[in-house]
Length: 291
Image 1 (cartoon, one colour):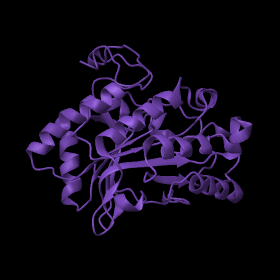
Image 2 (tube, rainbow, N blue to C red; image 1 turned 135 degrees about the horizontal axis):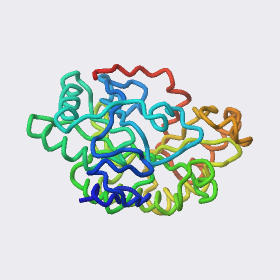
Image 3 (cartoon, rainbow, N blue to C red; image 1 turned 45 degrees about the horizontal axis):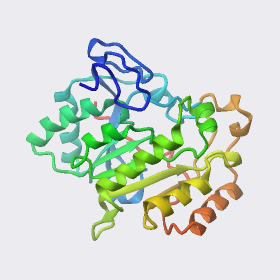
């Protein structure tokens, strides 16, 4: 089992999480959940009229020094849930009229999600499932989700390995990330919308623009156009602001300028990508707790 000699993600910690040993994600046998509820601050194809049914998992396999959700991802805000409880959360979001179940930071708890989904599906869960990750995912693990996940929404954070190591404490991010995005697209293809513009299936990529060009926007956009699809739906995000330990890194100790963002959008368009969802700031989005 993946958790017994944990290789759920590219960290490959090889700890026995079934015995509550923890590796880089600081998560043992149980998934931890911080909050859940209809979210109206996600990308438009996920939100529709009823909101995206987000479940925020605690902890993360990344250690981003600028994380805006650091109280959840780095400080461990949340509590353990058994599979039955996680299934109940999913079914509750469906009853609330959400358009999908949106697993936020699911990379390190894929086995736990699969356990809960078996229960939820048996109890009538029928919404599209969204895998909303930092993009540092194992292809081997993603293959377990083939036919399960309907919509993949990974980050593409960096094009430079050294930058990824310095800002997020991870190794070989560009190669691992691109392999993961290829596998996601192989499974679900380009993003498909219904007649109301709500996502049904497909790939949606997030790219947070960082100051000083640290996100490697030209390389990310070129990869998507050349190796994924010119029809890739990409959210070029302008909402970077210094949080957590970002003030300790001079290049990212200030907010993104409007010129830097405009240049990133131009780069994406010039690369041939035409399905852009530009999100200026979703930090005020409402999240209703149901836990």
